[in-house]
Image 1 (cartoon, one colour):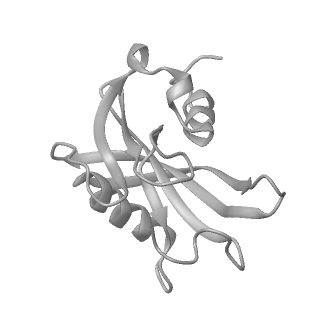
Image 2 (cartoon, rainbow, N blue to C red; image 1 turned 180 degrees about the horizontal axis):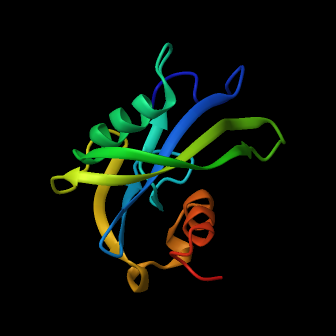
Length: 144
């Protein structure tokens, strides 16, 4: 894990994308905290001088090996995780988009342990990060 992510001095800006194809969504299994071992939408941190949509394309390619076309903005949220003592362990401002794949097959790398397409009935909400579950409900991919 890159230094400075845990117990940061300031919030970090992250991007992600809900990538949809023929009734399926592309998810990655997180390799690191927060959410280690849970399925999430692919994404990561914005680099200095990088535009949000360019960061989405780069991060999806890095984590899944897939190129995407970035669509509409879905949501902007805070993801703040505190430790047992109440100190901020992680603080991300997440900017999430809708995206369409331009081709290829998912292959996990970078911060992803695994990457694959899921049909609605294959997703178990308890195995998703809170952010991914909220976004998938927001676009009607998951009920509840």
